[in-house]
Image (cartoon, rainbow, N blue to C red):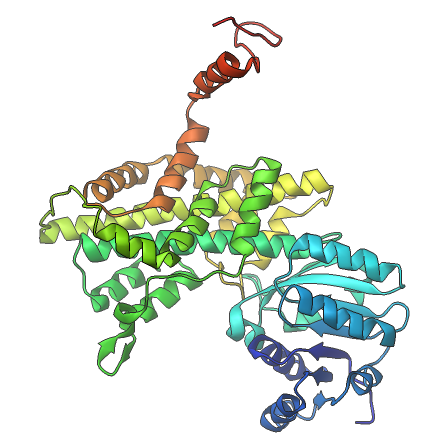
Length: 474
């Protein structure tokens, strides 16, 4: 290779390999390195021609570093945690001042800040970049959420804007999120919203399958119908319709998948920071809990021998089935809106707490394409969050409020009663409804909790009729 590469990438697992191909296919020369040389060689062999000679493999880190133009720009797509620190430790002595390391893994935002501070003392730049879209997104256009040095961002901007997915207006789904670990933080909350929406979709499936008795092909058609709803049309519902129809050896795969959901930690991190900052995000919390209980298979198996649901199975008529489909659609629509709201509230509170000055409208805009939670609803949400056009923002906000406050809410409440009577656990749906009711109700019962705390601990309380702090000898 005569000319030096525009950028480098370390880590050729599926995400890294696909992102490297994406970068090369967009016209940039990219050098790649993997600890296993055979993997690098096979990657170049498989995809070198596809890239038009823009993919370049390196056998050693020194060779890799030497192949990059200055300032060097290096993407890391290695396993989060210690492997990131290990790779930084190997790379940093080989780099020059102002070179840039970009961690595109699912790192905790506080780890990103620690790494930025450490590398800054060496004159090196570090960007923590959230990336969403899975392996297909990495190849064809992900949503990218870089945070850190603005000057370093400008150096990688031409590449990242070409590589990113496009929003509804054709703009790149990437912006400089903000300072320090804000990029990885926003990706973390994105994943928290993802957990919540996936859980309400799973609960919808449970209701339709076990109350409505719908077959898998029928479920596919039902969810395809939901995907025509402007507030529900989304990547997650789109793939759900495909999942119900997929067969292997004549059997529907969905019926043979164990009901133990995995997780990689980002949902848990979201609940932790929400609790730390006092942000109410119940649906994200129970979505994490639901994965935990699903994985507790031994205890669930033992419990089924001891716990008996005292319910009466209800027969459902054809008209009842049609009504159930609509009730689930209404519940899904309102709950989905509230899942986004909880995530945005957390980002807003954290931005103020850390003085990040995050642009909520731009964050939701870059979620319109490429990422897992992309949906048509994000168009209205982005407009509602944009202070630059006050009239359009108010109109979009009123549209969202009209949806939440309308007759669909009654349908949702009836569905929750039916699910409870039928023994179908719907913790995420209940959490969304509790979120709505907690903010809609003028007075909450926590006045009793304050009285109890004062009774046993003399913690004191405030009153509604006079200023100050009070204590009663109960």
